[in-house]
Image 1 (cartoon, rainbow, N blue to C red):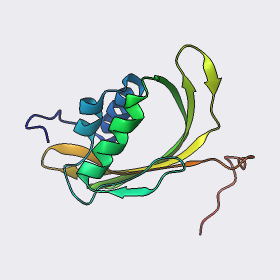
Image 2 (spheres, rainbow, N blue to C red):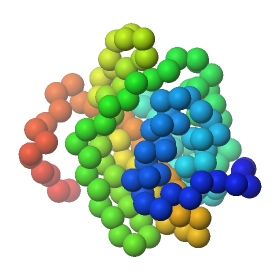
Image 3 (cartoon, one colour):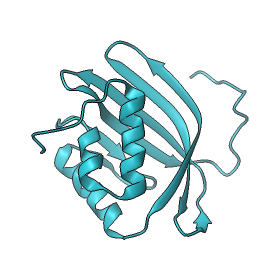
Image 4 (tube, rainbow, N blue to C red):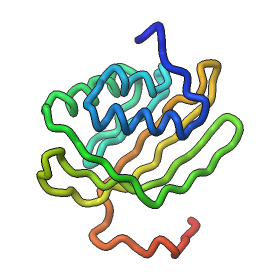
Amino acid sequence: MSAHKPMFTTPQDAEAAFYDALAHADLEAMMAVWAEDEEIVCVLPGGARLAGYAAVREAWRRVFASGRRLSIALSNQVYLSGMLLSVHSLHEHLGFSGGEGQTAPVVVTNVYIRGALGWRLLAHHASPAPPEMPSETAKTLH
């Protein structure tokens, strides 16, 4: 774990850093966004639930080891924020740099927590979107 981490003053700053690290396949930058905590959780599309800093780091190391760079567009962002916790629901539209095909949208929930070192990612859950995503104007509570 790094002794020096950047300060993210808003959850949106932390999220921007997360997606920048993802686009550049930068493991150190990616892990600088995460809380250094054994309570962190990460679920990648189609993957298992990973808990703890070491498991999350290893998952991102494997993702980045492929050498393929992603292009990422975000849409339908909804933020639910409080003083210490921020929950972001959004869609990721992933492609590969160099124009290699677009993947199906991914439905994502990112949870950020504010601590002494600013905002950090506590949980990232990404799942493939259903074949036909419902209209974004329809809101369902359950």
